[in-house]
Amino acid sequence: MDRETNIFQKYGSGIWLSIVTCFMLFLYAPLELLFLNQDEFWYDAYQLIPIMFFVFVVTCTASITVFVLLRKWSQTLYRIGLAAYFTVMICSYIQGNFLTGSLPLLDGSTIDWSLYKAQNIQSYILWIIVAVIVTVIYRKGKPQFLEKMIGIVSICMTLMFCITVLTLGVSNHGFEKKLGLGITHKDMLLMSENQNLVILLLDSVNGYTMDEILRENPAYEDIFTDFTFFTNTMGAYPATKYSVPFIFSGQWYENDVEFREYEAKAYAESSLLAALEEEEWSIGMYSGGLLADDEGKARFVNLLPSKRGFNNNMLFVKWQLQLTGFRYAPYCLKPYMFVYLRHLVELKNPPDGETMYNWDNVDFYNKILNEEISSTDQKCFRFIHISGGHGPYIYNENVEEIPSEEGSYEDNIKASLTITREYLNKMKKAGVYDNSAIVVMADHGSSAVSCDYHNTQNPIFFVKGINEKHDLARSDAPISYADLQEAFARLLNGAGGDQIFDWKSGDQRERRWLFYQFGEIDHMVEYMQPGRADDAEAMYETGRTYDR
Image (cartoon, rainbow, N blue to C red; front, side, top):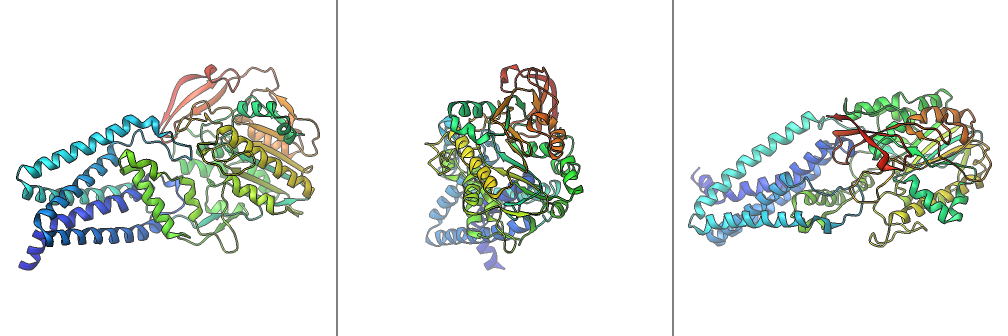
């Protein structure tokens, strides 16, 4: 007993400081991120905890070993090590929990770190102040007091982290086991000899930017021969998460229920999907953000059971550590911690014999270049969502990856046009173009500025009906994504692109748009647009907000 007491007296502060720091960075931080963003991650706590617990054990053991060795060499070295480690722990805790409001978003947009000079200075000030306080306590001849204080604070913070993460898990359904379903490529290039409806969704492409590019480059206009381009299209939301379920349902989400409940209801009550199911169409949904539930497994040909776990544990740990560092590290280190959240999908184990769908422009382009379209008698619906104009801006018009500092929003759109041309040519070569109704659209527009979701209300919308033949037509009819359910129904019944909307060029109309800033989705602001969709200055707030 005396020996155990002596060990605790000699190493207790180092042990507890190691435990709280490693727990905070390698368990608490990843679990908190998961629990607060359940809809953003395909994996659950039961997949994350074993891997990150192993990281916690290894790092904590290594940390305790260092403290033991320091204590054996010199009590002074041991206490200096404690002081330095404690400074890092406290600064990381404050940085990761109280100085995160201005963090740039991990939505794939290129981050201009020169815009964060104030935050960088603030971070330096924090670390200097804490280091000075700890040093003063130590130098004032109270190292023993500092050692005891570190032990007590570490124990209290460990308990706090445990209670907090358990509370977050329970309140956010964090301990529910997620279905092991994978969104695969299965049947993506399988088309019907009878009738097809294809929606190619190019993420984040503005109608007004696309119109400028087409007018400046006639070769791009030729891609959309037979299509009608609705230049005055009003979307519904500024980002993908709510836009796609709205496209399929026409039901507005107003923060009145949990998003997962709304999303499930939107797909379950989609008039488009119901009509396709009634006529026994083959339905393929190729989108990284698709709701993967049991009902989807029954209706979507490419949603298949997959193995639980990750196909690369080391890469998963690396990206988790980068995510933690992006939040907890000082600002000067954050540029080295960037990770695009959608890349985590690449770590999902595919079902046997299949490959996981990846919305990356290059991935889809290579697939249509290297594979042929096959045919079936069954009618086919294909919804294909690719990154399109979405940041980072790393593609040229030949769909080759380039350094982000050399790319631009317009380059990404030109890459999207190259992909669209190749896909439509593939359909023509396979003889399934004429018998297909085709929509090329975006879920929303883009401000082309990192972390700015204003001025995204005017997405592209091109449409071609079955056997439709003419030069590219333009219409400035004031349409809205609220009109899409009727438009899709008319397409299925053989209507041409200029016949799917009741609104015509020259009509006047007010259209609704719900704005939220990415990362602040619990607060929505209602706008109305009485003018053209691309005229952001004409929009006005109604005074209605929707909060959770």
